[in-house]
Image 1 (cartoon, rainbow, N blue to C red):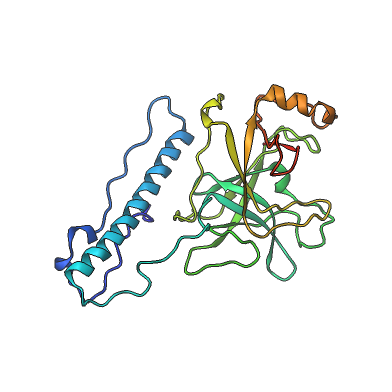
Image 2: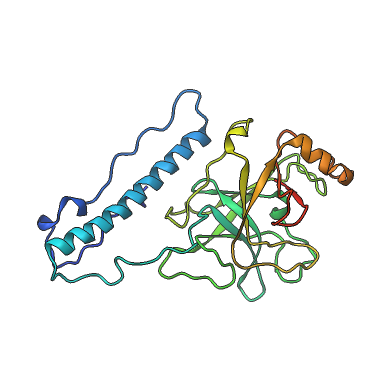
Length: 288
């Protein structure tokens, strides 16, 4: 892929042969990340991490290049806005995508979140594969796009960044998902075109092991607080909250009063997380 091979921006007044080494394109060959017994998702994760490191190295080289050119050519013409910008929370969670439904004014209404896991797929909840037929805000209950590279789903801030609404071409719902039951609520959405990875749009790695003890005691929940029911107030800004990972036995004990025909305990393919001491939502435990 070509999205990590860009050379630093150089004013045209300086000839190529006069450029210091740090200003030359940095394009190392891509390693082979496959190995016997290695899952495809693990190999792709290693590849994406490698790409991220190359982009970061190019960003660092670009800054060093500008500093070196300032030293060598103090009177040179400088490109506007090359250095000195300030990173914001935009890009803090570059895997996050907002799933959009077509509204009547040819705009999109975003009702679900998702995680980019490859250049063509996002992972989301199965209940996000179709909205209610009674939803009067949309023209079709089937979602149409995934917005990537943004943090505000109402007022898109581009600032020259690549914010995209990628068309959904197919949706794969877990075959055992049977609403309103709260199990197997997971789905994949395939995008029409490959996503261009940047510091603001980057896939998340898939956890491939049954044992989650090495993940640590906490997790970060991210989303826009968008829900499809009860008319609750939502936040257009991407939200993040740190929660505790809770073992299944404790979780089931805490939630035993909630057992019903649609949910009755955490299964082996689920995680339980929440804030037992309150703070995110007092005394509430959320199931992932």
